Length: 212
Image 1 (cartoon, rainbow, N blue to C red):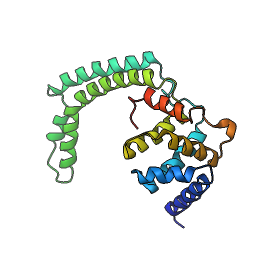
Image 2 (cartoon, helix red, strand yellow):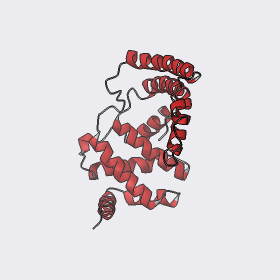
Image 3 (cartoon, rainbow, N blue to C red):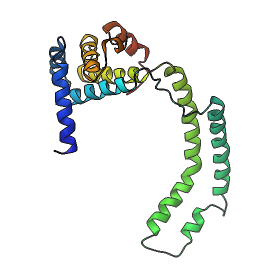
Image 4 (cartoon, one colour):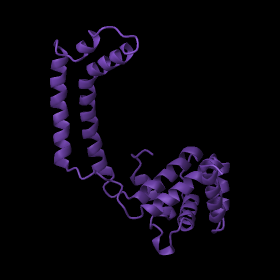
């Protein structure tokens, strides 16, 4: 049996187990009737449940040990270097000249021309990277500070359902997320406290700026 076939079998077994909990099969069918793909919803619930269990309690915001001061310095350094590169590119020292003045070679010329184009773009790319980095750091610090991996997966599920059905369908999502978590190996005392209808609504509304 192929890897994809094995994965599909695991998903099928998982969904059948979810259906044994409460009115989950009814919730699942309702979401599918209102626009969700049966296959996509099955795989998403499987991944969400596994991901929630694996990352239960862990914060999603991971800066790789980089401090705010380091990120701020990087942003400023990128701007400074991009200005220097722009100055170099306006002179005969521009590295693209070495590429374009080389003896013609049908095999190498396309790569040389593309590399020369990237050299011209590099200062602008670095400046854009700096601006985006600064903006995204501010966004993540403000919006992801208390978001856990479990929050992230729950939001992914809610946003998919909302996109396909026109509504987050909190009751049905709470039903499926809770059952999926238990089927994935979680225990009753580990169920995230935001896997309730009201809590999911608050989570979704509080993070309406995030995109998944």
